[in-house]
Length: 424
Image (cartoon, rainbow, N blue to C red):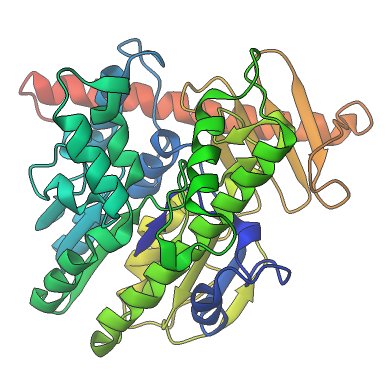
């Protein structure tokens, strides 16, 4: 299972014939089961991957805030400790389980290690993998060594450098682990290469020079004017840097496919969320629930069938989907599609419900209804034009949120009973 952070659906050729960035991903998807409407449960890793691993949305509580990194991570930990992970399900079925994860939100501190026989964090201060494996770039290594030799932490480099992760730096470790795995095995690799700052190895960089790539990083982080707006030229460079990063993701899939070929495995690839490239005035993955942040690529390869599925698939159904792939029954690509798909931001302030045609976004200030068939870029709020649709989807969303609140109450009560040593 490969998770590519921030990989947009429309940058993959199997979902957008105008894109030529992902030939290996396209080949695997076209020879497998491609889901054209896979939807993330949230627009950022903290609101998506914990939900994807457990199949359950995170409940809100009073012990964290968006301004507190450690509090946010502790909230993820409480969620991950409460529910069974897809890795635990496979481990209990006799699979040897291993992972390499580069995302700082998916660590032992946030309890992502449960269910893995071998858990490898690829980060600046990892207990598993030396930070020298973050990248094989000579420039990165020189910069890292130079800054580490300076007193203090100039520019907060120690907390930023893990976002410069490039898969060639640690791929040999993945190959070594694959060689030692016993069948049946479950291997999860979470790569950051399509995550900002879009640092791309030279062999996959076709559009930007190294100077342009690093310039685009600075403009992304700091803007160029006092109000932080990104000028048109810098925006074009950012988009080019992102496209090069997507090429690098496809390079990773090429190399990984070769490394596991002798095992003839089932392969699942998806993105945890998408990435805005100027749509709705945003770059990156802000706390918004538009299509550029929620619609993601997802395919299943080598599961004994081929298909293109246009019904909606919530990626929070992956625990059930992966469990189905381990059974001897024929894989049914439509088994986990849903007529309504829900998403929400990390702070649980904004929620959405999506159908094949409509999306309703509910925030504290307004209700927005978009007709995705007529307005795929979500530019026009048609809630007043279609009040019956708005009211119906608002009722569906409220029923979903009521269910989530009830689950939270039941979970808290069960947790108190266990903590008190009482049995249910």
